[in-house]
Length: 310
Ligand SMILES: *[C@@H]1O[C@H](CO)[C@@H](O)[C@H](O)[C@H]1NC(C)=O
Image (cartoon, rainbow, N blue to C red; front, side, top):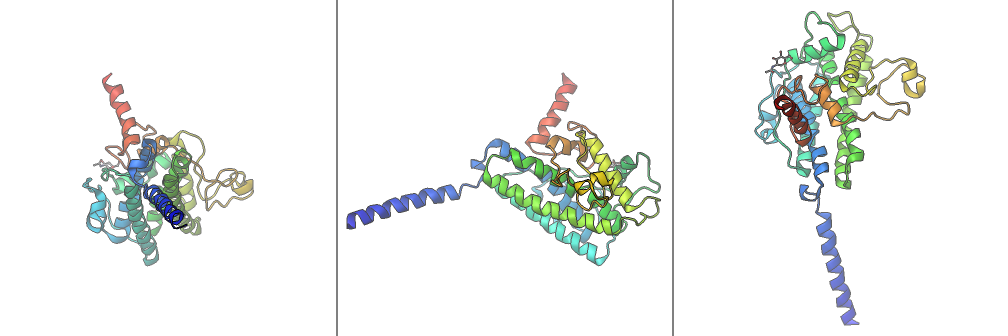
């Protein structure tokens, strides 16, 4: 009796040990390389959002608020504090700190890489808008000028991250990676929903001094992203043909979805084509003048240099 009790106790503690070791296995060491690459890739976008939101709302970025997170990467170009009303400033400040959290979460799962060089100058956003309208806006678009311009500039970013997380999820092999991406996707799509709702309320407002409305800006930006991504329709503005709205029945399009109102998925290649603004995953530009970092982005940059030297 006593013997079998202690044998049971030994078996129990052995089992516990095995379980505990298994349970604490969330480090990079246990992730397949493909999961590591897919988890590191979105750091590129999270860095961009962290800097754009923190500077926009608070007038400072990672270098002053969380210097360790930048891991020594270069400071962003041309980013600055936006002229925002108190409620928008408050919301954007919340987004900024959410992005800091996302950077920490990803880096607690994988090693990550330093902040890449980011071009967040007013001209960088102005050039996105010029591409969207297929002609130069005069005067050039200033993302930092007021609430509406800043919200439109913000429309350019979290949605792209969202489609990337939707795209990454089925490729991940481990539950811990999928759990992380699910958590990132939830808040990223929440940010997109808040931005779109704020813009939707202002949909018919003219974006001064241009003759286009807020809704027209969003439609143009979304069309540009479809064009740059080169994989068909995965992006929609705030007002669509009813046939493209939910259930093919409604023009208001506060959230983007496919025919079943499911989020669209994008691959890293599509995302690079969009954020480089070059429609080429091997040709940096746009917000990333020296390209994005991490294994996936760098493999495409290598493709370019091979082509050049062969
Ligand atoms: C930032 O982007 C703007 C617009 O594309 C460009 O004119 C400027 O040269 C860029 N700055 C750097 C340092 O790449």
